[in-house]
Image 1 (cartoon, rainbow, N blue to C red):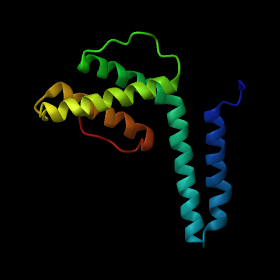
Image 2 (tube, rainbow, N blue to C red):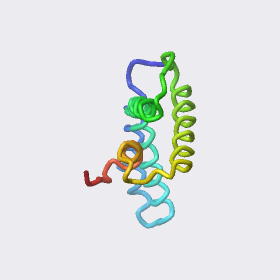
Image 3 (cartoon, helix red, strand yellow):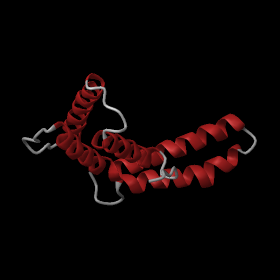
Length: 132
C-alpha cells in the first residue's frame, strides 16, 4: 500500500480520464458511450464505498445491536467480519419482523431499515435525495 496517491484518488483520476479523454471519442457510438458512462459510475461507487462504506457499516451494526439487544463482544478487526456480522444480524432482524408481524408502526424497526437503505443509496447514488 502506498501513501500517495490514495485508492480513491486513483479511481477519481480514472473517472476523469474516462469523461475527458475517452467519452468524447465515442460521441457517435452509443453503446461505447453508454459503457463508458456505466464504468465511470461504477468507479464512483467503488470510491465512495472505500471512503465511507466501513463507517456506515459500523453504524448499521450499532443500530442492529441495539434493536436486537445484542452485544458486540470483541472489536471486529476486518471489514469482512463486519460484513458477515451485519448480514447475519440483518437476517435475524428480517426473521423477527416476519415472525412478530412488525409493521411501519414499530418505529424502531422502521427507522433502522430507513436509515440503512439511505446509507446504501448514499454510496450507490449520492445525487438521490430522500425526504426526512
